Image (tube, rainbow, N blue to C red; front, side):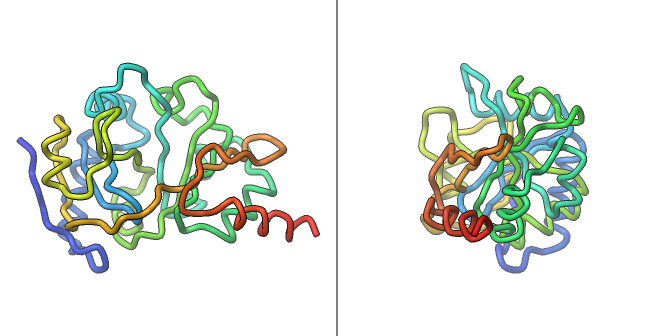
Length: 213
């Protein structure tokens, strides 16, 4: 049976974060607030747990799932190489709502990459997410907390009705309306925007053009 625990976005209680980390580390699923949307979290190094995420979303066609990290050091074992463009974007826009797609290392479960050879990674600006990641000590999956084809819910009461198989819901109340993270593929020589979002193309262009100037 699912648990629901109230959590303060700005100052989450250590006991709540510790319990959420325990759920994740034993292979369970949580729904947690990020700086953009509620997400489904699982141990991003555990293939069985990642499979549960796909099942919870009821996807007929499985898609890659991104991971969040609390530092470049946490990210490093899971990527093959980091281009100069990627490093510049990390330096300027992390932590924040920017997902970078990089070449995945052999440590990344295929359940995350779905054979793409790349992995989407983000360092969130959410204090709650960063403290939760520090408790877990490894990357966490981040995919919107909704069934495939449905709109993401802004309230835990809405999400609870949509999703099954979730062990713990962290309820921070109604999240403010916001755009999802911008997704940029930096696995090749030229960065490509795969999804527009909170970080604009203009911001990306200014940062990368200034680097080249």
